Image 1: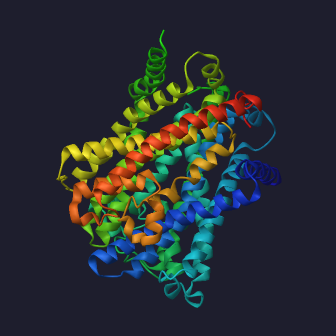
Image 2 (image 1 turned 30 degrees about the vertical axis):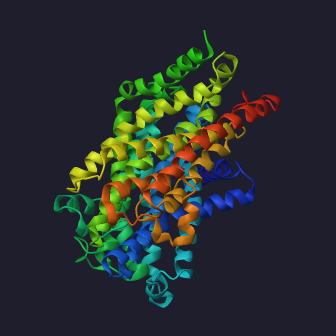
Image 3 (image 1 turned 180 degrees about the vertical axis):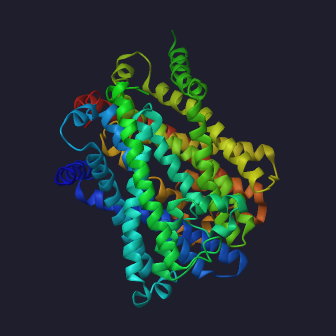
Length: 285
Length: 269
């Protein structure tokens, strides 16, 4: 375990250096803070445009989408963080083979790399939520600290961490045996989950059969659990009838399952990559 | 070979791999068409949730035009960074081909490549959300579209020249020019929603003017246009000309500086 944690720490340190040392601190801070906020403000102005067109303000839906979009940044960051780490280290820096040959616990090291990306995204998400409270968006009225289910939030965040690591390992496993463009797999899965997990709209708006698919996806459960604990709002759709307890149990089970599956698949993919000499692969396009 | 013939041949040669790349790696086609459609659909569903179906067409058009902006950023602005990384940049500089021809070829190939992506988003979006486009003038629409592309890719050429000087930060800076530009250019909502002052500042971006002008031709009064159509067309034409001239000047100055500072061949900066 100590060895695993040390590998994770080293992966995190390296990942953070790659994430942050490309620029002067002020530019890095600007990059970390401006990008997530502007992405979420696009949604805010969509709501404003719709309100001007229809004459109806929908602050609860805005809060639902705002929080969902902010939290989703972590899904996108960690799912693409691990795939990018594999491709970048293998093809751009040519060091994946040395990492694999070294005594680090490879899974721990990769998780550390992804957590560095996740840390930057986490800062962006917290900053976005904080700004949401400062700006007159109606979020302040709905996000009352006294009304937050802190225990539920802590459980949801812990499960979310496990879930994202499992998802990242699963994607990294696939990319390990793919050419350079495999890094788009993380981005692709991120885009698909953005739509299917109902990050910015209630699931009820999806066609019936897609709602069924959405409920089986662990990130859907995670976003719903975080929103319920923060805002006390349940999204319209198939999860509306679930109690908070049932949702947390389902989320915990799905996260644990995803981690076990992700870890096992990664082990198989690692063995296969070594047999096929993929650690030395440079596809060059 | 005359200068213009060399320019033309170099331009076509640089465009060639981009056009051919469309069919060489089929998974790229999937990632270029299906993936962007997913996030476009998510934004469209937000308007469906809000009972504002008129704006769904804005999102679809915005998604299609965003494809060009992304191409300008990643395949024009940051391209010399990738080329340096793969060792091609020094070959371009050593060859007798003018660098402006290389940039023009990148733009031409990029436009062809991205047109497929944009058209797919547009057609799939229209079919998926049961929308119809009825422009007031097809010819006007084509003219505005071409002007928008000229202005966007002209700006891309200016960025490409500037990126000659940058190393690893290129990736992050390109990333930084995505969401803020989506916000300012009003790709998913009428740009007037930003308020008059911000909207006028946002008009400095060719994407803002291009998308707004296309909307005015496609949706008439529902477009809630920023400026009169003729003014947007004139500004786009000015921007296209200005950016092309600026790119040519920037390229000459920055290429010389990059040579002096030894940045043309140093990788992993």
